[in-house]
Image (cartoon, rainbow over all chains, first blue to last red; front, side, top):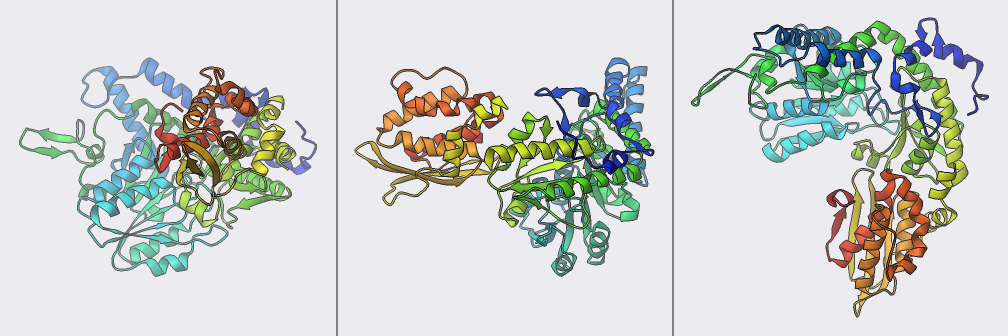
Length: 422
Length: 155
């Protein structure tokens, strides 16, 4: 693989005194493996990020030394597991700067967190004719639950348009808000284009209109420090596996008074105070929304992931990722026939593109032979693809372990794509 | 690179760039739409059936090089075949793609034209690209209007 094209600045920017890329990479065992005999350039962290040793070890340690079911166990091991699980909740609360750990609900992933809110708000708060505002940038997980509610309850779904750069149009959004708007549910960062939305303004305007706000932070949380109190959002969701934690765990943050006013999503064990065959009294938050045995080791793994990114620091992570994004944008812009889809001024390290004469899936297959892992397709954002008149894109997304050499591998791989497809 | 050249043979690239029978026949009497919801590829297959034979066949759609080339090759092969022969070709091609067996019997000769697609077997994630148009052909033969790669658990 050639690195001759790498500018001198590359190694410096990718390996600054404050961000030692080599040391970061050494923390991720999977990055040492080869794919098709090539060094792995993993450029699909927006779908799911790789896991540092600290997370893998935390999960192993849980199962090897401190595992039992949580809550109500009177024995030592159950108490340890409960401490680990509830400690993870406190860690997530600090990570998001929530007022109270009770405002943190563990779910299966971000999708189930959104479905929880949709179901629960659909059981009282939202009524026929009420309006829910989403945007063109949404992932299917923040479209489909509201459509299901629309079909069930007769609520009205409104969609905030974007411009050709993929930017959220705040003026249009303001025009869509009305006294009937009860909820605004928008993404913090577009998974398909990388666009960072103006969440602070979105939340302020929604509140001024009397609506609650849910922020889908699945793509925001891996790249930026989130402060739910400063944002003043009513609900914030993210998923563990995109912030270098395990899959199988997601988070719903909700303001305590709102969560307390909401009926449970699922019924079962652990979410009750008392049960008789005549009547059940539900537990207080957060347990009310956590029916059944929760993802215990996953919560502990998520806590380890939060420790990991917090120790690195989001200022440094963001600066590094932005340097990689800038370099990638420059290099890909030089490739004839390549068009970057999503050119917002504020972007996370996600780069979607299409290539003349080569379908995204063919691009993905050819790049894979070079050890370069990218995602190809509609990225669970079909309305957004329709907006740009394309079936899909190839998407390179950069995590904290990616460097300029990964971009070079991508560019070399794209050269091979062009050799084959012209 | 050798595997890639095996996958993207000149014939495949040629058919994907200039797909044959990429049209809706004037007197099409059966048609079906197929999609692969995982990747967004879509294809429509049109048939003119006369006396139990595929008198004409065409397709339209968008997709990757593998799916476009496979659809194009399919139209060339099934044209003039009886419905039963077309179904047998589907079964043989399908088995070949999922590695169940090498092609056999009467279909073997015809399937020679499709050996250019055999490289796809080495790419399990891409097999559905090659079979989408064939599933859509079967849906058209069966008078079903739509088919999805995700509704056939044999894929």
